[in-house]
Image 1 (cartoon, rainbow, N blue to C red):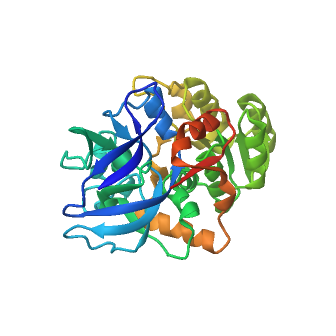
Image 2: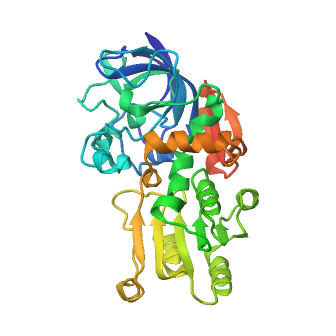
Image 3: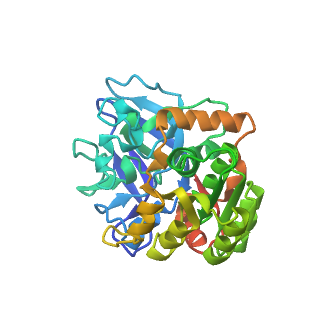
Length: 368
């Protein structure tokens, strides 16, 4: 069949809208009609060259839609089911899935290659094979993907909203609750209030943090953080650190969560310095693999028993947490609708990402 998709042909170039041939589902695969896709900063890492994929590649790794067809051996879903996609596939039986760490599933090894685990592709054109970002390619009207990449959700939930729990919401939420271990009475600082950082704020608030401090140079994002429960907001890390020192009586923060779009040494150093004894620094944002962004005092690390940890998908469990977060939303205990700043058509994908770069969006959504 044919499908229209937004494709990256090389780093430094915008997405191009093209028509592709799409293979039907094979063993263990499903055909999905996407209804919505999120504009997440991770796709900008592809265009900026920070995460070099195999080109050409269909963009988009945050998606929700309806299953149209299933291949042999599919047991998780059936045609007509509403699903949210997990950008980390989860097989359920590898070393990591079987020990409760589905965010590290071995199937995720090929997500930047854009191919299926066996190395094959489902998008084609003119004899050329096209990859799919995170084995999903949500910037396409339809895609053939692994059943291990989908999570069935309640069909009364709006998919244009549910799409957000495929990446940004659990990554931010889990950065606070799982990786950061926020507890009642803690002081938590979040650096970078985009689609992930705003949900780290939500997660810390829900976990019972006494003070949640958001740091972002853009006033619109600081104002949004206050609406999502932040107790204090600051333009820069220095002002935030002064306030943490005051609020903690000089003890420092319990957690610092780095969710800026592109991580650098300056923000990591500020976050490390703001936490006190036994504090945890969570690095959720990314940078190019050859950039060394973590440089801290080993003496401080040791004598004050600080922890630095990275997290993928917020160390969340896609099969459990996607459903869990949507149930919280359904109960009025998690804000999702308020996260969406602007909705776009597929052909406006480049404008959507320019708006993201310009700090105009907390989260943009493509509606197919």
